[in-house]
Structure formats: C-alpha cells, structure tokens
Length: 413
Image (cartoon, rainbow, N blue to C red; front, side, top):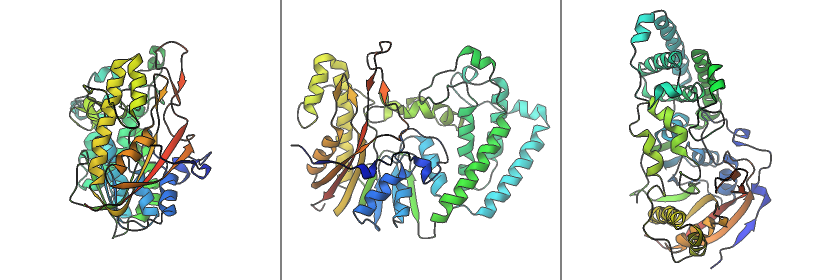
C-alpha cells in the first residue's frame, strides 16, 4: 500500500535555520528546526495535553510544544550530552541566582588560578587517549573549569554551566571543525593550535546565560513541566495526546554519529562507556535475518542482492524502529496524533522509504495515516552527499527531502 505524500513548500523554510527562532545553547547534530513542529502542531490544532518525544535529542520538540501552549512534556534519549542540553534549556533557574553564581564562579576560578601547584594537582579526567586529543595546557585549564563547576551548589545552575563547558571541550580539542565524527586535525594545524581555554569558556558561558534568559526562561512558567529521561522509551503508564519527534534516519555508524560527536564531552563529564553509545542506538546490533515483508522489503532485497552485510544492518535498524513504534503506539490516547519527521536515506543506490514504513507500522498498531508532507531539506546540519563505496570522488546524494508523517490513534488501549 502506498501512503499519501503531498509536496508542501510551506514546510521548506528556505533560508531559515534553527537560530531563526531559537538560538541553540549547544551544537547538536541533525536537529529538527522548531518551525516544523510549531506549524504542524498549529495545523492540527494541538494546543493542550501531554506530549512525548521518544528521541528527544537536545529538546526541539519541547520548544514547539511551549510555543503552541502545551505545558506537560516528556522526552527520552540515551545520549547523556543530549539530556544535559535539554535539561539546561527547560529547567527553571532564577536570573538573580545565575548572575550571583557566575560572579562567584569567576572570582573563585581566578583565585585558584594563582595557585599553580594546586591547579597542577587537579585530577585528569578518564578520557580515552586524552593526550592525543588535547594539549597539556588545555587539559589543565579544562580540569580547573570542571573543578569550579563541580563546586556549584545548585544542581540546576551546575547543569547550565556544564553546557558551555562541553562546547569548550570540543572547541579546544584537536578535532576538526564542522565534523560530527571524531577526526583529528592535520599535524601542521595542531602545531598552530593554542586556544585561550578560560576566555573561550566565559564567552560561551555568557552566550548561554543570555540565550537562556532571553528565549527559554520566559517560557518556563510555573505550570510548565518538562521531564527529560536518560533511557530508551518503553511502554509507559503515562498516556500521551501527541508524539512529536524526529528519530534517527538510520544506524549511527553510517548516518549521523551522535555518540562520536558527543564522546569527548561525555568523557570529560564523567560518563562511563561514552564510546559505546552508538552501539546502543537503533540498529547498533546487526540482525540475523533480512526483512522480507512490508513496504521496506523490496528496498532491502535490492540492497541484499549487492551486499548482504549492509542488508542485515539496514534490517536491524528497521526492526528496532518497529519495536519503538509499537511502544509509542500503545502509549497514545485514542484520538491522539503521532508526528514523525524523517528522511529517506539511500543505501547502495537504493532509497529506503522510511516515511512509508512509519505510516505502515502505525496503521498496524491501531492508527490511521492522515497525511505525509514532503519538504525540501535545505537547513539541517547533516551531510547531503557521502561516499558509500569509499572510492575517491564517488559520491551520491544521501537526502534531499524530509517527510512529516502524521497519524491518528483510532483504537483505544
């Protein structure tokens, strides 16, 4: 069965970005721009009730909900960095406390900085190959900043301060700029790289505080509740009126490497097994059999005729996505909406109809497919071309469009 797809240029937002509406507090890969969620919620007149985002990332869906009048939202993600960013955005902290803490923090840090022996005695974090990714002076300064953050008493303020710390970790490492995967810069660039860690941190801290106070704090009235959970979503006792989400478009190894992007920050923040996050995401463990039925099967069979290993990897992702959709479906109220924003990636020159797969699986779980909008993908931070054969110069388009799949729960329970 072919589910209706309508090209809708209204949702292209040509020339716009995430920051056109809300400055993000921290860079994060493949974030949905808020304009999509806000306009689709308005189109279907969703202004109240409980929202779920089972792959919440840095929390874009919560911005959309707040803009449309929703006040109770739940998000789930297994990447600790994503949880940190989302909690920082949507946890209420008073302006006065932020100002006072920043001043005390600055005074404390510069006082400690005078004691070189103490600074030199601060413990180094357990970061894999730390000397490969950071210079000794950068490690010392980052360790000092982290020590001072850890001494902040208010845990919500501490969370907010960790956001610019994470950005500083990334920007002061030897990783290449504008890369989501962990690649080291060229040797000659390493020799000329000498960042002013402390000045950079305070610059980022002041930007985060300003953006938080200007764009996020005004939305966090006393009746707003945003719960962010560091786990995969399972069937919930809570029942939701709407699900708004943008799930991964494929396994992290071959699409967006969320875990690699976050690794250095997560290790500096003390997260165990930070380098195993990608293996824990959808499609992280290879399937034993390829999918042989449903709307996705023809595409997987084409891939299988060329590369059985890739067909099994792709099958693994869609098996996991199906389980997730089943869990989400059982947690939506009758009459509730599911809104999934997805891309149809290409593997071995074969486009995978993820939008059709999502519509099919929701219909199999008691939903009716209402509409799928097709929008031009011109403003998402992810590669539009890649080299799937690893041959020099052999690139293909990976994704030019995105799909907004809207379904409605018809059956209760």
